[in-house]
Amino acid sequence: MSGQRLSGKNFDVTLGDMLLRVEKATLEIEDNSSTAKDRGVPNGWVDGDVAASGEIEVDARNLNLIMEAASSAGSFRELPEFDILFFAKTGTDELKVQAFGCKLKLTSLLDIDSAGGEKHISKIPFEVTSPDFVRINGVPYLSEEDIEGL
Image 1: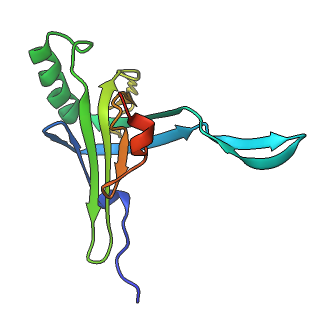
Image 2: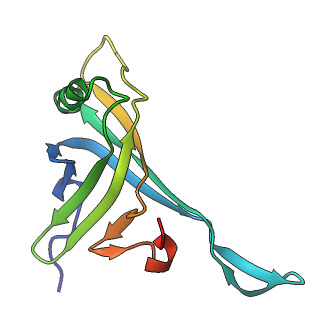
């Protein structure tokens, strides 16, 4: 049975309690677990460190929502960490990805083309800073053992 599949158009992105319309969003997980080797031959595996980061691209209207929060915090760098929710649903498919404790940075604030024809977009990278890390459809990426004592 076929039907509508998820696409970027189906996603709502919530930054804290702000619903944003993003032009583009990414979230990447880096997991440095690797294969253990004995005399150069694979023999099991070892845990490695993890990290997650991403980027949201927003137009001026949505950047202003973030800047209002920055103004309330005192400055952009004083913004608290946000939980980010990426959620999409169609008739048959659903995807909910949560990234916890995301610290925002601003990189590509301006990219002006006097010819026009495209709306202004700002790029806002973020890093996941919470031990709650990332959940996919409610399933945590990290185990209880990974975050024990944090």
